[in-house]
Every structure is written in structure tokens, then in C-alpha cells.
Length: 318
Ligand code: SF4
Image (cartoon, rainbow, N blue to C red; front, top):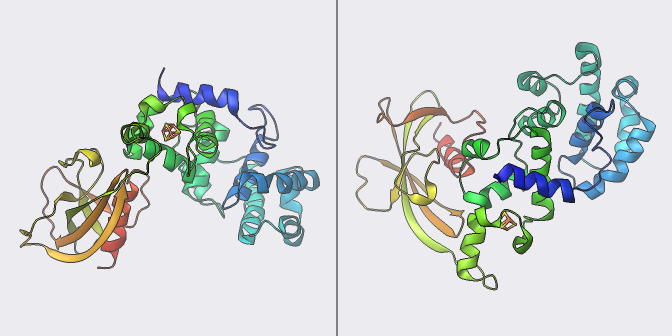
């Protein structure tokens, strides 16, 4: 059984009943999903439930929402916080009614033009409403994927092939919230523990003991384009635990770094490794053939967070 089947079978037997989880065919689906996704931004499920129930009782559809005034919406939102979400939802409902005939667009680009909808919300709505194959990375999902194998999200897309894309997106979040929790994941009951790098490393060390971090020194070398905010990355690096990551050149620290300029030193953790990193750079338009140029600014889903931390440091140079 592949990973997606295992997660989905766990989900089918364990998912919570939540008021916005209506059937695929329900006419309320689009409205309930967009409303709940706005409410769930920065807020926990158990806090959202009573607000959601009250909101849909008073405002039962997108059309009704678009005709209300902002004060009414804010009043119903009172206590949930982050009121910009309520204002954006209200503006979005008006656009959806006027421009899209009350339907949520099927295009990622068009969805992202709507107020309050970023990458994550666009991805999750497309998966949930249109069953599109989308990687919607909230904190729960990032943690699950990271613990499973430490590999980047590009590879995860292949690991999670299924026809039930919407269910899978939700199943991963649910699994992260209920089983693969931030503290004390319930590994002994986990259906995918035999595929999990974190479980394997904990088994070796012993579950009663804390993972001991090894601090190691690494040098990272970044080729940069002078006027374009671009960095050269490759998946071709020799360090096993970073295999298949999109990265600049990385190697164990040495003192022979003559042709590179030192930028900074910082620490980053991966699994049970703590990396003490010296970051070097040079401006160059020529790069080795196994590298490709990437924008430092574009929010690229397939750049792992380890590499994004490098981007952050590098951006200080521009
Ligand atoms: S074995 Fe533990 S860490 Fe690994 S996926 Fe399952 S719950 Fe998460």
C-alpha cells in the first residue's frame, strides 16, 4: 500500500466531524470551504467551530455575505481576531459574485488575485473544491513531510499520487494535528511508521531518550547574479542527508575558501543534525553546468525551507 493510501485509510476511519466538511455534491461546499479557510488562518479548529456555526446561521451563503455591510461581518467575527481576514473575505465575496458568478475560480493565478488569498489558501481551495493535485503546506503538513523523510516538496508530490486529492490534502493536515503532533507524536500507533525517517532514528536511539544533536560545521558557497537577485542551485551535492535538496554548493567546513567572500555564520537544524554554517558568495554570470538560476524573491513552493533560510541571508546583499 503506498503512502497516500495509508494516510487516506487512516483518515477515513479517524477524521473529525467538522461543520465545513460537507459532501462533495453539497451546494454549500464552496461557501463553507472558503469561509472556514479564512477563519482557520492563524486560528485553531476548536476555536473556529462555534464562530463558523454562528456565522453560517446568520449569513447562509456567499450571495448573502456579499450584500451585507462590513460592520455586520466584523461584529460576527468579534473574538476571532485578525479582522483583516473578515474584511478580505467580504471583499472577495463581492468579487466572486460579480465577476465569477458566485463560483470559486479554478485557476491558481486568478484565486491569488482575490483579497486575503495567498499560496496556501489558493492551493487548499483548489484541492478541496476541485480535487486538483496540490501541495498545501500548512505547519502540520510541513512537519509530517519533514519527519517522514527530510526530502523536499517536489519529491513529495510523487509520493502522494492519488485520485482523492482533496481528501489527501485534508488527511495530511488531520494526521499532523492528531497523530504526528509537534510534541509527542503517537508513533507507536502510526500507520506509516515503517516509512518514517524520524521513527527510524528514534527507534535506534530509544524512545525514552531525547535525540542528541550533533553540531557539525559546513561551508555553503553561493553563485549570485549581480543585478538580478538570482542564485544558482543544484540537487547534485555529496551530503547524504541533503540529497535531492535544491541547494547552493555545500561541503564540510575547511579553510580553503580563497575565492569566495564570507557573508555570515548561522545555525540550522535538520533531523538530529545541527549545522553550523559559514555562508560564502561570489557574483558571477557563469556557473557549473549542473546548476540552474533561481529567483531569490519568488515564493517557489519547491524550494525547501533550508534553502529559503540561505535566501534570507543573501538578500541582505542587494
Ligand atoms: S512515525 Fe511518528 S513521526 Fe513518523 S509520521 Fe508517524 S507519528 Fe509522525
